[in-house]
Structures are given as C-alpha cells and as structure tokens.
Amino acid sequence: MRRILISIIVFISAINLSAQRKFDPNKFRMEIHQYIVTSANLTEQESAKLLPIYDEMINKQRLLHKKIAQIAR
Image 1 (tube, rainbow, N blue to C red):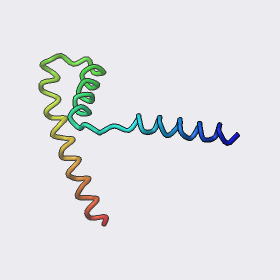
Image 2: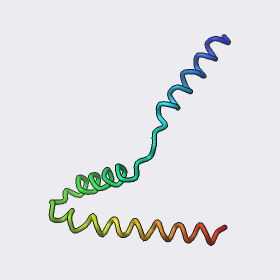
Image 3: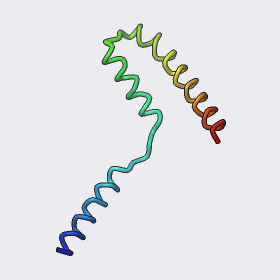
C-alpha cells in the first residue's frame, strides 16, 4: 500500500513538473491574435486594422489594472 501511494505521489509530481513552463507573452499575444482572426474570419486587411487597436486596448487595460492594484494596497 505504501509503495502504491509513493508511486502515485511521484507520478503526480512528475506531471506537475513537466506541465510548468515559462510564460512567453509574445507567444501568447500571437496565439490570441490567431484566435481572433480565425474565429471572426478576418481578412488580412481587416486583421491589419483591428489587431493594433486590440493591442492598444489591452495595454491600456493592463495599465488601469496596475493603477487599481496600487490604489487597493
């Protein structure tokens, strides 16, 4: 029984370690862009107009969230 429990703990730990990887914000941004373009069926011209505006909106939201977090402290 003890060996089975230890084996399960080791297995779960190995899964957790392999699942942890560094977050790449640029890769995440590109994946979001691809999702938006695909789900909205945007043309190249439409995506060229929309995605810079979207990125600007996200940057402004991020700044507002930081300000809110500072005020809350």
